[in-house]
Image (cartoon, rainbow, N blue to C red; front, side, top):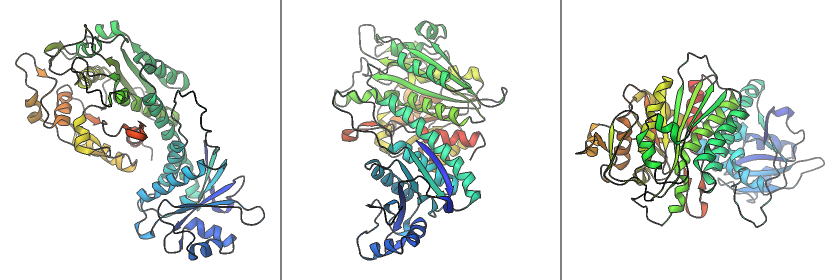
Length: 497
């Protein structure tokens, strides 16, 4: 989809539908006022007659008014007094969905003129591009029935007040579009069936990114290479699977060589049966989403490369299946991690922390400024936070604040949760340095505290996205979270807006 910004007086060239906002109680939005002046007050009369209530999420499509006029999509903004960033995003989502059901090919969006508390022109534009890009996404299904036609909408032009706003809005559109593309990649990978999106497939997609984007290189390690690295915990998880594992390492160089990189570590369990500690059959199909951490860090990498951010970034993915077989790891087995610490595996379904601890140890060779691991790690995080917030644990308060602020700006929020020796005490083992589970109580915190034991001298944070990475039920599918949060964090680190 193509995005462009224009100053209001230049606005209409080539568009076939204008999108304007209207508040409740007959209050026309900034864009609607401008359009209404050209329409001789038609919108005000329509609203006054009770034909459009303008509640948040309402839409009404009007035919062209007068010779050479545009179709108008009216979007309800709710009461002006309650209009904020949440309502702004909701109005845009409603507009994008409504336009997708029409034959509109080029929309002229006036919603960018609305005043939104704490949202400058760059962020207003960024949200528009992200919302419209995400709205255009289609699940890569394998149905044999005829596919629904994709949206005809190919171009979105937003209207701004002046030349100064034009520059920053253009930048915001580029950022939002790139975030939308990163979300689409993450969702594609998550939505594919596990017999397609295998560890080998993930590795190939990472190699494709290196071919597509300057500054990106990809290196793959097979089982022999992983064994050479002495990643005993990672190998234990994969030993029951027929699909071969992959350690995927992507590097993006956008800054000076001596600048320490940010490392993103993604959990890439392309299917998690639970292993010998087999999961309940109900909703086990959703365990194809257990590689969503890997998908999101690849999505963030794609966005960073598209924007050519002045930052060095390393993406590390531990990809494998967790399957039961005669050769699978067993409860009570003890393995030696890459760090040299030993782990007693009491539950083979607590496998994410096993692959991540070795991947975190591997990140040390890059001398990173920061390490952030992203994982669908625990059902306990879903119990604690539902599907609204990602869980955030960190050994560095300033890093945690950075990530929380990024989540707020990106509307992809996280919530800080504790780690510490109290939780590590739950992981004591009579036979190894540490056990991989510590009971039901505080499960998300004990899992993160397990990883904390492998992060000495690292500035590290952990994002548990078990509740936010996908939706179930009739809306089943990947959300692409936390790509927006990660990208916003990296934008700030790179010195961009």
